[in-house]
Length: 592
Image (cartoon, rainbow, N blue to C red; front, side, top):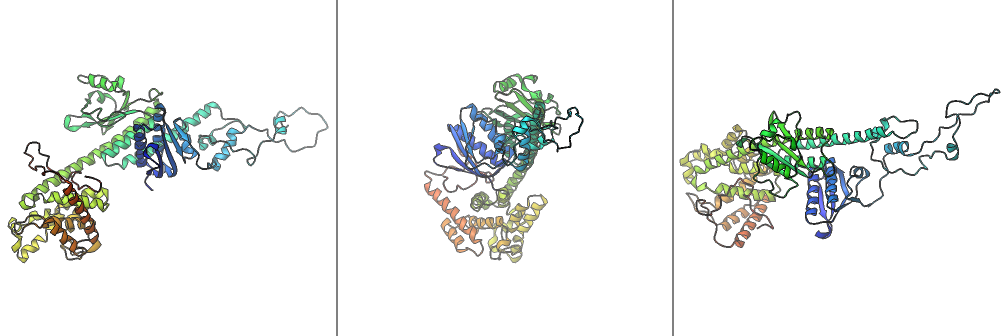
């Protein structure tokens, strides 16, 4: 499926956009963000062209419907073209959405056309029976009303499908209509029509729930799970304000805000809620009215502040009999409260969201533990070689910048950085004496050093680190021409991440002081890299890395003033750079 692409048409103040691709869960979030931004910039009307959109998920329809209500309340309009009749029917209540024709509408499907006359066309009398020989004795008229054609049938025969005008589209499910019994040729009774409408809403609601649940199950990132969950709830139930508070196990389960929508940025910053009042909500119930929550000691002011912020309802997020957090909602426009079926649906969706959030938090905790482990091993490696201190930081920065230019897979970037940090972890098995004086190594000592990539990979395998990390460590001394070690593989046989780390490690080693030689100037090291294009180093990566160096030099020339002190003990000194943090990157083009 092609991801949603949004292009601006004309100047920024015209608010015209064309959409292309698929509006899935990610596309729905992009569309929601676009409409919020247009509203924030004072747009009175936004024009959206859906002609090139191949499919719209029910979540995308929910975003349009909710934004339509928001625009209506603020006297704005959303002009759309290219939407089919089914999507229009789903958005029928959003009066702020104006439809503009851009091509002749597709006629209804045959299944809909067969049902339409049954609902729309006035009933015609049944045809008269075939002529029979009259009886000589007069008989009473037949009680069957179809024996004699009615005057209406004689004057105006029932229209045939070919001559009847096309009936307008009715947003009612044809499958439900065909199953509801009706009188001979008569309209559907009002009570059955109401039942049919409710059935349609149920089908759509459960289809949305299935789609949202599937998307939540795939979300391993906590921020992604929170965004998807909050957007789904707001779209499905038309609420204007939402907040998700999650328990903090380090603070005895105190609930802290993790996702807030409908308020100014930082509205609930430094806001904490005691979990005690919400633990009284039964896990099988979940839903609660905020006004009915019993105030406990120390929680009265907090609950009153939540009510004053406009929150009216909530759902306790229980996972494995533990209170994972709470979902707070407020503002449903003209609708007051939640009906019983809406409460059940909201509780079901909240339970699914709670499980997804719990899984994402567990995954993040595992990542944090791995990160702490990697940082500890990085310190161990540098403690054995004082000359190497700081080199890991430089390697990570250059590797990150080069990988981004190469469009390295985002989901594998963290493993690449871990591999760059741990590339020489196998050196802990090498004698400290050998490391201090590698200029006079015997053949046996050199053979021992050449084993460090393999030993490092074995250490990481025992620690169950990801395979991508292990492969970078195992192969970072392999060379493009096949002259590397430990296996002597060459070319594309070497994993891409290992090729990147190999080149960067070589450059950083040349420009670093060692006990047996002085550091090369940056320009000389750059020349050595360029001269080794396609021999020990991958030629494609060499070209990209030289571009990265150009950007670094350009940025260095633009920098004014003395360098900032690196000693964190000095007053007002900046914090030490964490090479594993997302900020440890070299700015790309257009960033200074």
